[in-house]
Every structure is written in C-alpha cells, then in structure tokens.
Image (cartoon, rainbow over all chains, first blue to last red; front, side):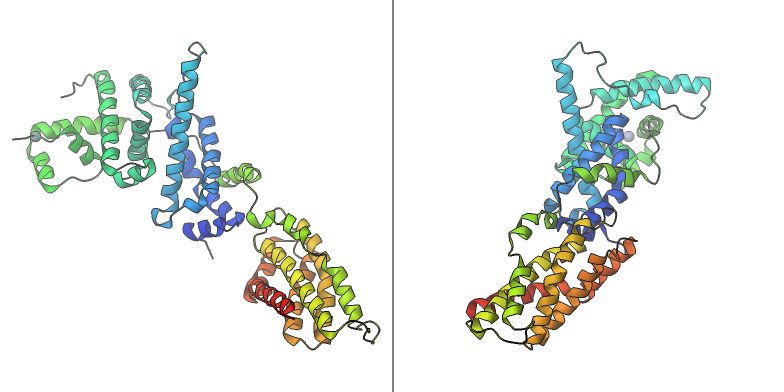
Length: 193
Length: 230
Ligand SMILES: [Zn+2]
C-alpha cells in the first residue's frame, strides 16, 4: 500500500525514517526544480534541496496536513532560498572586490536547442536583460514570480509559501512582472503604456 | 471608460478575472493590445531550462541526506536499554528458586518473594523487548539489523527461561505472549531477515498482525504493578 504524503509525514514524525525517505524520493525533483529557478545555479540548488529536506525533517512536528506536504516543502525551500540570497548579498557587500558578483547564471549556461542565428541573438539579448532584471527584483518578488510563472502556483499557494497575506503575494507578482516589463520591453522595441 | 489596470492584466494572463473586466478586454482594442504585449513578453521568458535529473535522483538525495538526519527516536534508547536490569541473571535465579532445574523448591524464600522477583524480571524483559520491537518496526532494510540481532540474541535466552517459568507456575497468558515474542526474537537472532528486505517486512507484519508491541507493553506494565503490589 502506498503512503499518502500526510500518512508518511505522520509516520516520519514518529521516528520512521523510511516514511521520510518516501517523501524525499517523491518530492526531490520538484524541490530541485524550484530551487534551481530561484537561485539560477545548479550547485546552490543542490545545497538547497538538502537543506530543505533537513529542515523539513527537523520541523515535521510543525507540519499541518491541511496545507499539503508539497506546499509546506515549497515554503521551507522558499525560506532556504531567501536565506541563501541574503547571505550571498551580505557576503558580496562585505567583499566588494571579490571577483564575480553573482555566480554564472543559468541562462548563460543552458543553451536552447538549435535556434536560428537571429533568434539566438534576440534570445541572448532577452536572456541578458532578463538576468539583469531578475537581479533587480527583491527576494520576495523573485520567488513570487518563479512560483507564479514557472510553477503555476495560484496566489493562495504563493502566499502560503511566503508566509504572507494573499494580497501581499499578489502585489509581489505584480511588482516582479512590472519590473521585468520595464527592463525587457525596450529591448523588443515595444514601448510600455 | 476606465481601462483595465496593469495588475488586472497580469491576473488575466495567469488565471482568471471577473466577467466585467473580461468583457472590457474583449471590447476595448487598447486594452487588448496591451494584454497581447504583456502576454508576448511573459511567453518569451516562459522557457526556463532546468538541468535534467534522472529518475534515481530522489534516491541520490536520500543517500546524501540520511547520514545528516538526527537519529530517529527509537534508536536513541541505547542508554535506557543498558540501564535496565540485566534480566538474564535474575531469571536464572528465579528459575533456580522455582526449582525448575532441580525439581526442588528452595527453602528460605517465600512464594510471594519469588513471584515478585519473577514479575519484576518479566517486566524488565518486556521493557527491553518493547524497545527492540519498536526498532524493528522502524528498521531500514538497507542498513540491516546488526544491532537488533545482538539484542535479540541477548533477549532470547531470558525469554526462554521466563516462558518456561511462566508455564511452570501455570501462567498461561504470559507463557503464550512470551512464546509469540520468542518466535520473532528467533527470526531476528538467526538473521533470517538479512537475505532480503522481504524478511524484515515479514517480521514487521508479524509484529503488527499479532499486536505484539501493544501486548508486550501492557503485560510489562501489568507485571510491574502486580510485582509492586505483592
Ligand atoms: Zn480598455
């Protein structure tokens, strides 16, 4: 018989590591995907996956089955991501001349499969600008945008992941899209209204 | 006429908007053009390539994670385990006093005292068995049962003596429970589980189906109470 998430979480809470293993195996892919999109860096994402599950294990007693285990994990992963981004920012502020300001961004390293030269130029342009624009978002805006745009979460889920009110979550998505538009539309030769 | 706000347009892109705004969007060329511009831009950044992770990724994550996890609660009971009375010596004494080896009851110790010692030894034994059963239920088939195997061997000797003593004094209920427990202890001590995770599963199922853990707990508590009241 297959454990449901909440049954496995119950078991794990009682010290059954096998039950927690089921949860790890079930959710690793989606946590990695989310972590990667939030950090834009493979190694950071791997670290965040580990940290997310470690925190989840230690906080199992706080898990409320009503919220869904996936949502709860996303929330933890989101917190890890905020911690990481802040720590890195702080480190960069402390070491202003320590080489690269940010690790190589994912968009620089992952080539899309065989686009035409013009498309490549255009998409590189968008890529570079998107990278810049994403850096200009606040942590919350970036995470809200990733959850909304790439993970297809609704506002309620984003609010739960961020631990904020739905209105605040909605506003973060709005601010993120607005900033991205301002940054990217000029490259397209489109004037925003 | 009031045009749709940018915030509403973004909502329209991701989900749904109210009927009035939707109708406006259908009828107003300016808002529709704005919506298409927004959609075009958001569509263009939709492709967010994530490095591939194969289907074994979850197992990899677990393999890296498991050594870092705080030990599960039942595994932290080593201290409690060793603090418990080494029951074997007590049981041998009880058996001796009960005349099981010689067929003769020893003089100088009352029936009551003997029963009391037996009940306390039984209670200690069941305490230790309870810890082992809990560990077995939570055991990781990948790690194996080395620690549990040693404990089972140790418990097996005292279990036999206690079962025989219980039968000897006509305590059928305790004798039956100890008999069921002995079969599990024997399986674990012999390592019949170690060939496959199936073996462990069968042991776990037996513990479950016979409600063994529950019975061991109850009987242990009762024995202690009975012993103290004597
Ligand atoms: Zn309009």
